[in-house]
Structure formats: structure tokens, C-alpha cells
Length: 135
Image (tube, rainbow, N blue to C red; front, side):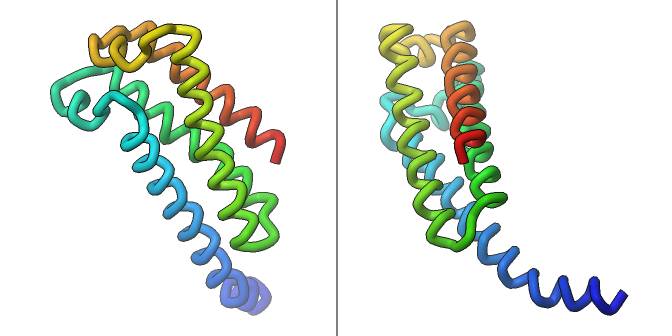
């Protein structure tokens, strides 16, 4: 029992630091995404737009998967920061790639086209899984 307590006392500060940095990056990544994408997802969600909700959920999952994988492999806070920023940038590229394929994706989400939102979600989650595996 004493070993478990010592392990907790030694590991808890690092757990809080790494977890806190990752959570801050996740929140920052979501904010950056919402600010840089043309559609106003929060406003659309408040108006009952399901496609916008699917899109934002995909952002949250799409960022959390590689960031969680980064926590497993990170040797320091710098690892988390560097790979977290990379994950944010690659998720923005995933949005752009889906927009190129589907043409006018922001307007389609504003028009509540569920199919377009689901394809976007699939692209974001697939990109997240590949990123996580690469870490």
C-alpha cells in the first residue's frame, strides 16, 4: 500500500501538468477551428442545426484522439505542445480536404445537409486515428 501512495505522490503533479496542458490545447484547438472555419457552428447549433453539431463533435473527437495518443508517448510538456499544435493544424487541413471534395462545405453545413456533415466527421475522425497511430 505504501508503494502505491508513493507512486501517486510522485506521479500526480506530472499527471496534472500533462493533463492540464493537453486539455488546454484541446480547448484552444476547438476555439481556433471555430474561429477559422467559415461557418459559425455555435450559432448554428443554438438554432438547431444538426450538421453543425456533427461537425463540431468531429472537431472535438478529431483533436482529442491524437492528443490522447500524445499523452501516452510524450516525454515532456514540449512533446505535448508540439504534437498538439501539429494535430490542430492537420485537423484544419482535413476540413479543407473535405471542403475540396464536397465543394462549398460550409454552406452545406449551414443548410443542414447531414450527409455532408457525416462525411466531414468521417474525414476528421479518420485523420485523427492515423495521426494517433503515427505518434
